Image 1: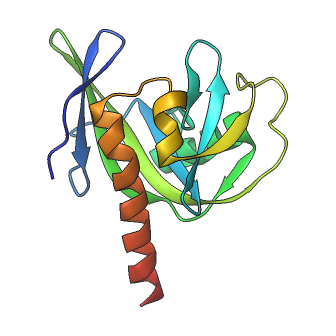
Image 2: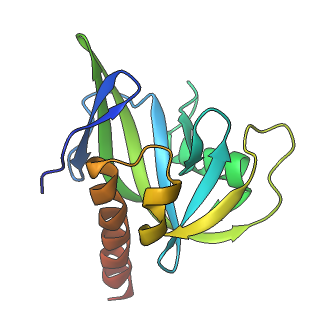
Length: 159
């Protein structure tokens, strides 16, 4: 499956679905956490509404970083993380990679004090074009893909 290119700040952004793996350790993670057909969004200063995301700390596994970021930005507990693929950010001759996961949202509680998030909410795919901080043809394709991958994985897990 091919995805259109997008942009993030001054960088070209490409998405490569799993099983494609980044050729080097990802510097960041994003996680698409779903409750039914609604995805978790966090209101981050300077960005606006976005899925939980952030840097992978030197001592962390990307999956641990995804869980930590979801908790820090939304007070969220996540279910089983399913690999969605990775984003590739390109600028000049530099390439950086962002791991992406899709999961079920188990619960949310209070957002921890001292985090950058101003709040969180759930949104349907139809609402995202008016809410999401970076809505473009790439994101328009990635969100439904994330839900589809999760539903397929859950169907396999139940078999």
